[in-house]
Image (cartoon, rainbow, N blue to C red; front, side, top):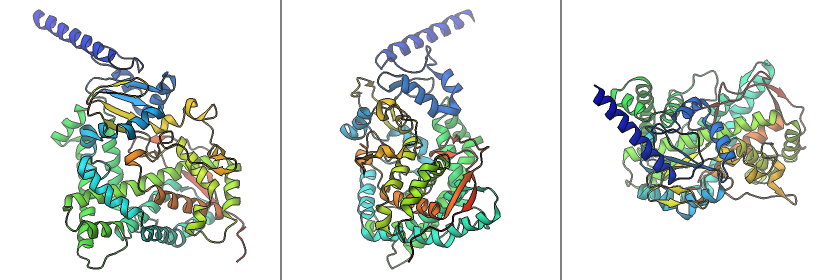
Length: 490
């Protein structure tokens, strides 16, 4: 027995020494770590506030970069340094794919869809999607879908809420709007989720559960935990599997219906089917459908939720937007495009509250980042837009202020360097739906602000729900007040 104890101590000490030696090859900055277990204790303590914790650590790092090592997890380099972000997403793009670990965590939900794919599969999907997203016909179709959903359902719902005076969960309304809209744009079908008299779509509920539990895998203190649960089909992994089955059945049903139609429809899936002509199997098309929904529903609803929350405490900014949007008669594409102050306010909101707070890649080969950080082959490399928006070194001493004016120079809107403002990624994986997202966000924001004021419940505390996107915990309860009309005369 004594021999076994001694051997155990020897193994423990050797593992600790090897861990320390390995850490010396990385940057020295990071959370407090111990031999063998790394920073597992600190990680566990901050598990419910990882974004804030990482931000604090990155802010204190001399180069806004750190290395995280913990028992049972791969070494991760986390950065909020724009030069490093450009290196990862552009300069050495081929060395930083999504990688095996990211793919493994999200594979049950996203399969080999564009957000989870690498190599030839990603390039093929990207090429087809890029072509379609740049067509005028798709842009017009998107505008038509947003206009119809807004005028026929969204604004009447707000009008009804203004008469009742009751609290309305505006995040829920935005998620329903976005789900209806992405289903129309991507698949040509209408789930009618914005009709609050109807129950939430089973598919939408399943997407919520699947997104949350998939992201939970990445936050596991020990990654073997979720793998063991999946192998045994118990607990959260059993729930995830059930939710994924609902999502996949919905996707397959859409594919079957669209494949059976002869005439080309304007939606994205029909365009994919027409262009690929059998190059994608059913599983691949299913993964594309799920990726479209995740991107088109959750990100825009998340961005707008935090935007309206910020606006509620900045009436002077709301007034400037109101003055801008009430100068025009109709919300056409060209008019929406010209709303520079609204555009800046949404950009500024996403700087502080990006819909996707961080993103990770996996290094194929050893590398050095521009700040000197060594990245070992197989390591996870994470760039952190949420933390980047809170760095004085990037945005100045007023980085925590909601200040749309920072996006203007000499009175003209000036886009920021995408590696400094990585909300839509950058480089080869720059978000193809960026323009589509801005059309939807600006149209919704302008429509709401022209006709209504939203008063947020003063007791409401805004916190994140740990998920793939920045969902607000407990929603966004608001009282809707109708404005006196100040629109231009016809």
